[in-house]
Image (cartoon, rainbow, N blue to C red):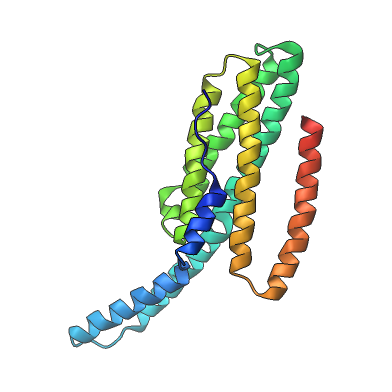
Length: 210
């Protein structure tokens, strides 16, 4: 029985409806609280604290730009590997070395994503909406990894490959729409052009693999 899979597009809609803020808004709140604390203690408002917050914002911005896109990249790589595995499995069966290697490489991709790109210390610096997307990716990765570790039939491999490809497409769309909601009109137009070109390239590669 195929488990219920997280849908990152649903998470994005819920997050945007709640009007969740970005890390910069949270940093502003921290700055205000710190200034109030210093004032209550009779201390001057510290510049060093402000500099530390700016440094935190810069680090968070870098993580924000890389955490989820890197996860999408891992799912995309796993999609390609599993589609190749399906092709070999249909021809040579599940005992084929080509199938075993590609399933193993897919598991490696998911492990790398969970242990590096989606580490807790990276996720906590994301906005609430991005955290939800990251957690959806983690949940999907863990479900998929356990299924890949226990594959016994070609049908199970085909379903795993299909679910991976579907999730990669969904989280890619959710990330795209989220980023668009934070951009100016000029940035949106540039992003749309790049995204359309990348999607055409990815879809062409996936169609070749199936």
